[in-house]
Image (cartoon, rainbow, N blue to C red; front, side, top):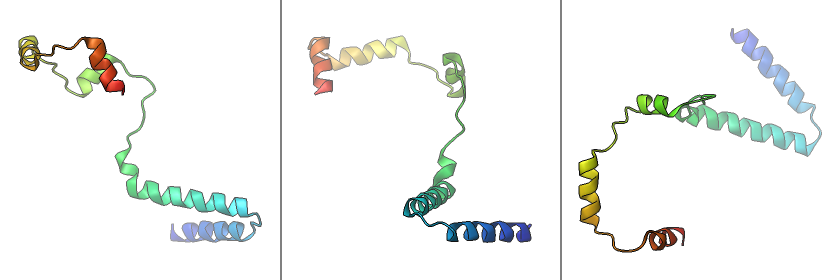
Amino acid sequence: MTKNIDQKRHQIIKEINELVSEHELEAVSQFLKEVRWLKEHGAIFKDMKDTISLDKLVEEQNFKGMDEAQFNQLVEQLDIQEPIQELLDQLSS
């Protein structure tokens, strides 16, 4: 296994040494940065799914929702008097 890796490494080094364009060398350099970054941080990314449904998301995230009575109690406690459009305008500014 090590011999195969060493052969690949030497082949890649040979190919890099044959590059003459600064643009090509920069592309290789950028690629190596990305490989190192993914090695260090890649675990934070999960594979993307092609499709997902709302029901599947609810199941995966164990979503329980909010009790309607509790929600209504919170609304009353907030005692918001401004029109909804004014509140929305405040969010966008």
